[in-house]
Image (cartoon, rainbow over all chains, first blue to last red; front, side, top):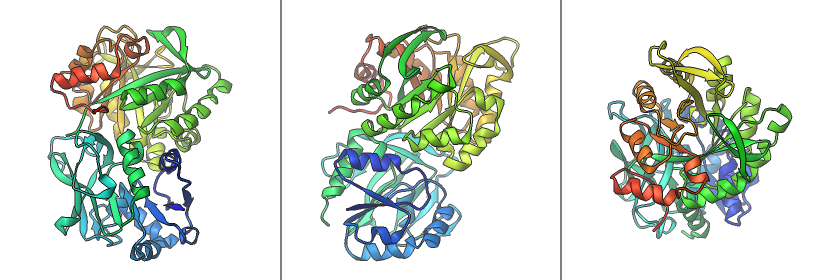
Length: 201
Length: 257
C-alpha cells in the first residue's frame, strides 16, 4: 500500500489521481496510525512552512515521518513536503523535520523575476533510479517562493535556474524529494512517479 | 530555464464546448473532457474551462467535467465562469482543478479574492478580467462584467493591481475588442498590466497565428498566452506553434523527443 500524508496542507486530489492513473491504490489519511503499514509514503503539501509544521506536530506526523524514514521504506517529498524534510525554513521562520541536512530560503526579491515562481521549468538531474531516463529538455510545474539548500553536496539530486541556480531535487538513502509538482508535470512527471513506485532503495 | 506557457481555453456551455466571436454566435464544437485530454497529449501547458452557462441549474454540469478531466490529464487546469462563493471554489478545487478564475463576481465582491487566497493559497486564485478600449480611462481600457456586457467604473490596470493586492496569484487579461477575431492580442493592455503587477499575466483574446503569440510573449510582456480558435478549428497544431516559438528563441516546454 502507498500512503499519502494529509496534514491539511493543500488539495491532494491531483496527487491521488496521478497514482491511480499509474495503477496504484493510494490511501490518503490524516491519521498516522492508518499509514503504519504503508510500503511507501508520499509527503506532499502546499502552503506556509510554519503552519504546516504546527499541523504536523499536532496530528502526530512529525514523529511518524522520522520513524518511517528510519525503516528504510521509500519516502517521496513534494513541494512544501520536500522543504519540510530539511532542518529549518526562513518561511516563519520555523524548525523543520531535519531528515535531510539543509535549510529553506526565500528567493531574493531583486532577481527581476516574478516571485513566487509559477510555471514550467527544466531540471538538471543527477543519476538516481527515480529520475532515470528523464530527458533534460523536459519540464516540470513549479509553484514556490522558497527554495531548498542542502548541506551535503551529494544529497543535491537536481538543480534548476530561476534567477539563481537552486536545488530542485534532493534526497539520501530511502528519501527522495522534489520542489516541483510531478503530478501536474505531464508525462515527465508521471514517469517520475512510476519510477518512485518501482524504486527499491 | 523558466518557460512561457501556452494555455488552451475551452468555453463550456451546458456541458459542451462552444466558441463564439466577440462573445456572440456560439457554436458547439465538442466534448470538453475529450478536448482537454487531446490538448494535454498534444502539449498544452495548461487548460482553462470557462463556463458560460446561463442557468444556475446547468452550471452544476461543470463539476463532473472537472472530475473526469482530473483523472485524465496531469497538467494544471483552471475553472472559471460564474463562481461566486468560497463553497463553489472549494467544489471545483476538490474535484481536481488546480486554479479557480474569478471574474464578474470578484468585481462585485472583491473580498472573495482574499477569502479564496486564504483558504486555498494565492496560486489557486486567478483574476479573470474582460477589458475594452475606452479613451476615458487612464490606461485606455475599462473593465466589463457579465460576459462583456456591463461596463464598470474600474480602469483595467487599477483593477488588476487591486486584485493582486487582495491575493490573486495570476491575472488573465481578456480583450473584448480582440476576442475571437484571431487578429492579434491587445499588446498595450497586457504590457501595462504586466508592468504593474508582480504575478504572472496571461494574455487572452485575439490569438490567431504563432506570430501573435510570439509578439505578446515578448513585446506584450505576457508570461503566458491563451489560445482557442486557432487550435479548435484545426488551423494550427500545438506542436507546430511551439516549434515555431522555439525556433524564434523563446523558452517553451517541449513535450516531444
